[in-house]
Image (spheres, rainbow, N blue to C red):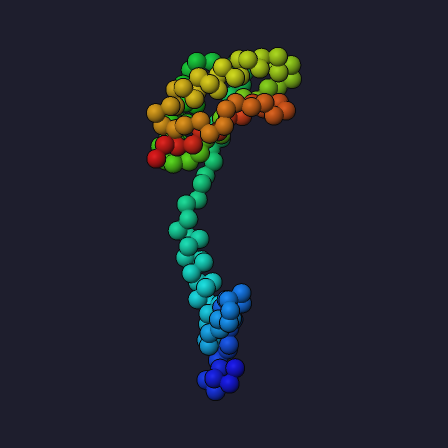
Length: 135
């Protein structure tokens, strides 16, 4: 502590569990600033995952399906995750099988662009499926 006072710096305990405890003489404010700067740099380098959604109905026509499939391919090529879901309105919930078949068909058609992260699952009036892009 005497050495730290002479140099007008702080005595920082690095490893309190060691025997004897390890301490270092440094400017603590500067250390915190540099650590914050390092954390910010690491955070900016981290990849940001975007999720794109595509909505189908249980009775989606072939032309509409192909149109949405092209958009899904584009999203996966760009590196975004895809959330495909079938929305059941009113009494259309009786067509659960159609919705599942539609999502599995989409997964099969997009097999070369992405892999299924989560199989179709019914949540309330929506049946959702996640597809992540291939590296």
